[in-house]
Length: 198
Length: 425
Image (tube, each protein chain N blue to C red):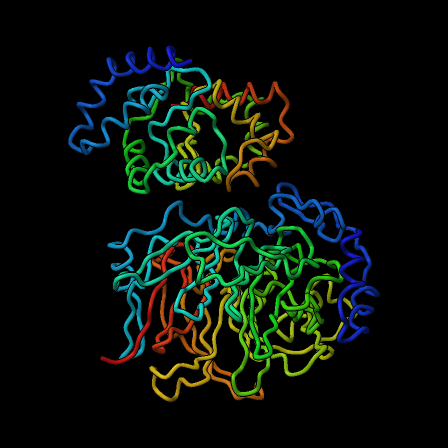
């Protein structure tokens, strides 16, 4: 486990250069080191190369802050994050929110043409009124996460976690209801669709 | 059902007839099929409150109300510099000023003074109780208790701190002498339903050293179990309790009128009727055994569209004052200090948490109510506000306390701060 982490860290450090250069003036010295820890799993540009690890790039500021606070309080339990959030300062959290929000969103490998949703997808999305919270573009806003361009395997994990009530936090009330009637196949269709939104 | 019958049996009944009133109306309506895409709630079933849905606070909505939900708050307390900018926008009467008294105090709810000058502050689902002290001229905020469920209500009597956490009234003996590590608490009263919906409470100490405690229904509107919709009076020394008043929805604030010793309390009215109905209330418990109307009659003159059938508002105690729709009145205090001008003596200050079940935001301010001791001639005016920047919420007043110097302290559970309003100089 430790070796694997170290390997990732090195790999991340090597690939960190472009992102660091772009956001350099905005990042205080003491934060760049901490950002390397984030990059190790979430990717240098906040675009995750790792299975079931979410991309953070272009996530709404307040959403990221809430999740870090939930994880720090122990409300939301994510084993891989436990060491990271322990002792995380409020000022760190206030930095991470706007920082990740400022990164360009993930570019899907096979972007979906707009207005090309299949009837299958529409039947899942329309009655659940996903856009009323996640926005028409699925870019999220405020405390609501961006879904567009998120890794499909992570979305599947998130859907399952909501469905089994493992994922805690204030969005839980509505999301449990939204996903409780989704089949495994529905989840895959939705995740695939959302991950391909630009 | 066991806790319910036990609760009923163990309550010292002030008025036995009140229970019969609740039970005789215990009829389930069948809910019509919901319109396509609209949320619908049947909160009359026992399962609804024993295993409440996560979104239990929502209700049958109209097309216009789609998507309305309680405010998510903010992840972290507002930084000091931003608090000062916000306070600069708060309007006050001539001669008053407002400043930050303490910050970094996430989810600050009810406040209670210890004998030696410690301010204890409850929280919502943070589950902690803070102790704010002065050390070397600096105000220090410390986490005193943690790991509770929703310790919104705190009180201080005879050197002990009392914390009410949904269904447990804890006593922390000699709390101020043990600020470094909270002493092991003793449960002094636990005859309360265990569910979270409207289960967060408030403690109102009276002169005899008992606490008035509100019990909200586990729903927006329903025929609830007979052990809720009420105020009880509990003696923390013996665990004895008596029923004081019924027909009450969600109350999270009240105070004793220093002129009469009577309990007054704020009440959050039901949601999902409309933006402008019904009004939230200020109630006066002028005698034991009053029924304040819930779930049958709202704001003294509005029969509930479902539960009001066959009822008459004349049969229920009207509010001393209607405070306005969805303003969410929480903590309140009779002004007993000596700092403010004489005309403020025995006026009531009310913290309005602010609306969510409404298109345009309403509330988010401190109201001043003047009223005669017998409950007559009540009128209100805005005292401090508003914590709104357009439709953006900049703070949510949750409780009011009077400082020893006669200034007013306001707990804000969104900004995570306590403000001080003082007069003169």
